[in-house]
Image (cartoon, rainbow, N blue to C red; front, side, top):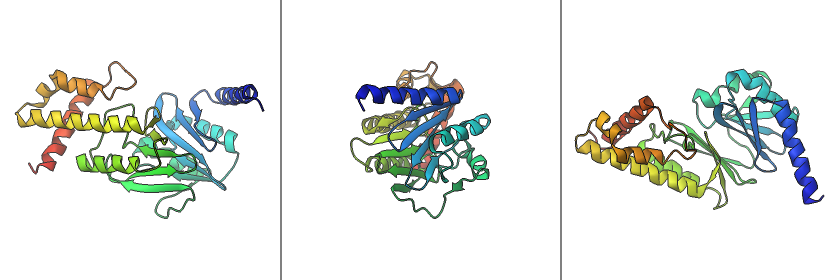
Amino acid sequence: MTNLKILTAALLLISSFTALSSNINLERISENVHILSGKGYGTNIGLISLEDDVVLIDPMAGKNHLAELDTVIRSIYGTTNTLILNTHQHSDHTGGNDYFIKHGATLVEDKFDLNGITRIKVNSHSPEDYVYYHEKSNIIFVGDVFDASWHPTFYSGGIEGFENAINTILNLGDDQSLIIPGHGSPAHKPALHVFRENTFKWVNIIRDLHREGWNVESIRKNQQVKNVLEKFNVSKKSPFVPEKAFKKFIERTITLIEKEEGM
């Protein structure tokens, strides 16, 4: 088949999915992996084809779009046995579990033995963050350890847990590995290095100002603090973070710093 014919076939396939679903975004990442999400609902949903099963990671496209998500998945793989994995237990990632279980899927929890997929537990965004590496496609699903659409939320594991989690991800695969964040666009490892660097910059400037006696409101108005926060705004949204969320990010960072320093 010529390259033109392959491109034409791919475009027809994509257009058929678009016609099928007006509320579900679908992106073919590799021969065995698709990423889906609900339009207006930012959770990245992984769909991995194994030899005998289809693996569904974080199946939450918005509660009103679960049936539509199911239809799109079946249009790709038919009625193949479906296994559910979660990167963590927050509802924007697990909210579709019950729907798919009622329709025949199986939730994989304690006993994990999927050929071709490695699971590693870390503690950063939540006490039980799971990172999944699909070796065949060289793709890593990291949940909200890395959110490409928001500022870092390392509130469970603190700075140490965050660093350990990022190092775990960086040690998987190779330089060509594709990282699927919990939200936002897929990225490669250089973007994760930048995310880690900016997170440390954020923590350091908040720590310095807090030690100098600055209160939360003064810190929020500091231009250097605003500049560091803006480094996480990779999609250039305006405004990036509502003022209430900005203040909460500062407060929670200070809490972690005080805990780290035994204050």
